[in-house]
Length: 116
Image 1 (cartoon, rainbow, N blue to C red):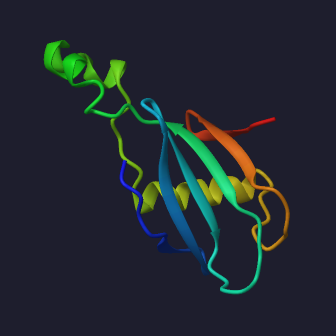
Image 2 (tube, helix red, strand yellow; image 1 turned 90 degrees about the vertical axis):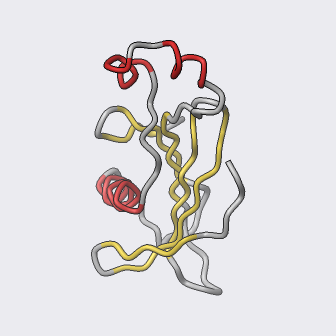
């Protein structure tokens, strides 16, 4: 996955920045923070499953098409998904205006699980 500049997103009246980085061939990390130049804040980092199609193209070619969704997670990270992650992070206790270490979560279905 290519490195990209942080994107802007507006969620429920607040402006954030976000990036997506590959962690390995089966996961990406979405990082989100308040868009406040010159002022610190706490970063939300969410690891989610994403099977890189380039690394799994053999499976894509040989698996029955109706089973691909069972085998691989190919849904990309979109602005809508990022907005959902922001809301889930806030509900799980992320306070973006506070300073501190990155707050790390992993997706588990439709919810977030805090990493140790």
